[in-house]
Image (cartoon, rainbow, N blue to C red; front, side, top):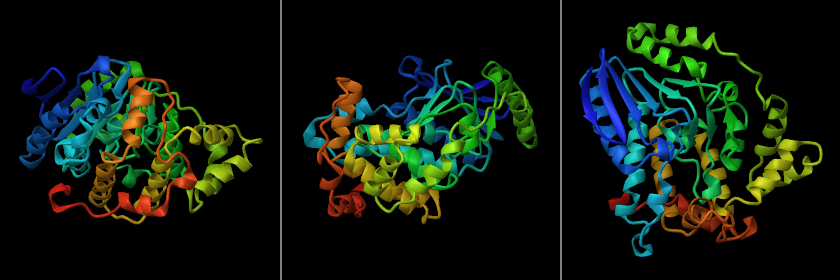
Amino acid sequence: MMSTSSDKEVSLDLVNGKGIIKLNRPKALNALNLNMINQMYPILKDWNSNNKVSMVLIEGEGSKSFCAGGDVRAITGVNPEIRGTKRQVEFFANEYRLNHLIGTLSVPYVALIDGITMGGGVGLSVHGKYRVATENTVFAMPETGIGLFPDVGGTFFMPRLRGELGMYLALVGHRLKGSDCYHAGIATHLCPADQVSNLKEDLVNSSSGEIADVLEAYHQKFNLKPFSLEADLSLINEACQASSVEEILSNFKTNSQESKLASRAVDTMAKLSPTSMKITHRQMSEGKKLESLKECLEMEFKMVVRCCIYPDFYEGVRALLVDKDNLPKWNPATLSEVSSQLVDKYFEELPEDLQLQL
């Protein structure tokens, strides 16, 4: 083993010609911060551009979490006078560059998504060729609950899930566990949690041509359960193909007496940022038309810069993660108050000095 980079929060090693990345903030559920991103990007780029590795494998320290998301408390805890400036959006710019690099690697990328995989953790995994879930995996993109939107390339992969499943997951932040991640298309393979260390060892000792066979062998050991959303897919498709969030909510309300999923969706949407839901609906609709991860990330960067300017992101993080009173005061407070003009602002071109360079 040769250690390429060592840091308390993330380690990057070369083992048998394989690049091994380990997120190492278990007490913070391996939440992603700027330091970790800045450690990973240049090493991963070097591995990729100089043919130093035949495979990259990423994992999280501990059994609870692969990566529970970006460290948004650090992002939002800034002086209001510098909100939306280059300094504050540096995290997102660097994170999106890392997401794009992962999605365009020339070598196989294997993400062992054992445990919580949300937000920024999804961006570190879902764009790679292989994503291996376990019975401990909990996947979600719950950003509408903190005044944000499903970023890190959510625009690219979520609209490409079957039917309107991506729109549903993006709007309400529904959690998928274990087998469901495979059925939904989030995970490419499954592995029993107690076999993950053996899988990692076999991958490290395999040739690049053997990776798929190794993953399939462990997948066959997993006790695959039926898709928990299977019976609800027709309702999800029917409800979420509507042209507005108001129509989607109305569709769920119409079915709330007969469907637990519809009833939960109605209750959940009442708590989410109205602005976030509206920009997310447009984001997912646009994502179907965009052809590349690059285009999607460029659009998301326009959106996230505006989220760093407008109040809901800060209020959502305060209510859910800082004060934890779960009583966000959204502004605007209702869907009807979120004008199309306000939604348009999130998608406007940025000043030249704020544009994303991938």
